[in-house]
Image 1 (cartoon, rainbow, N blue to C red):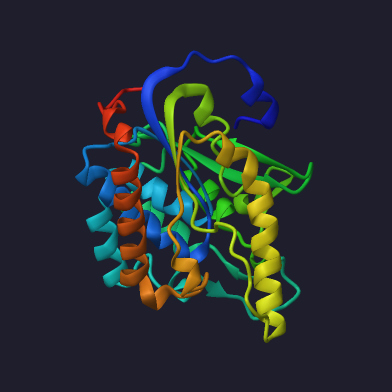
Image 2: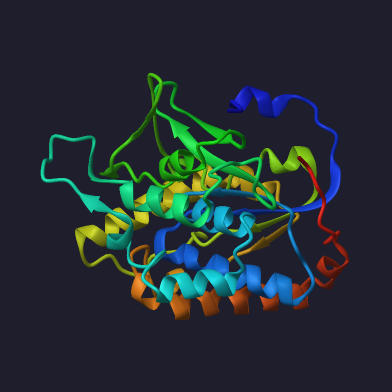
Length: 281
């Protein structure tokens, strides 16, 4: 595992394109549309970083699953409603209301090698270390399922993931756009942030206030990573849907596709970025 201090070590940049996918629950399904639009325009990122849902989408993409493949998995009730990825526990005395058994089993089923090194593209998964209160990037080893589960471990909702004597939770808690290590190895970084800042018009219920408060914190912790992106795409599905709108996956996908297509039209220089697959093993 690479700690934050490791990110400060000088690394020779490669002429490759990286992409950073933010967390955002169901809103993260917009990443599928974004990736499809990029590919339709001949842009194929070869190094991927992500937090939470961005880590899930990014990992399956790195394993060779196309956006269309992942849409089909959603239709087949895998990668679909959050209840499909959770196993509720009967006791509130646990560290979370649900385990990651379903998600971890799904990773092992669809990515049998369960290894960072054997992925088709390089993957960087952001997690939060509760022991030292810092975010970390994990990008090696044979426990892909464990670190993906940790990155998606929403505090209080999912159980924490323990590794040795350290507890890990959702990477989006402290870094929702984890592009820092991409900046060390990529000449071009494309960011897709599905939790852009949204000004509330009215807050009718306590849950509305809570949602906007959490989003405000996520936006603040994303600023450093956002600033490192050469191109930053912001699908606005958040204006109509929320983090648990899994039933609207097709519409959210379309938000991602249209936002990315519009962005590329306005930034035609993106079409010149290196899209040749590079082996960075």
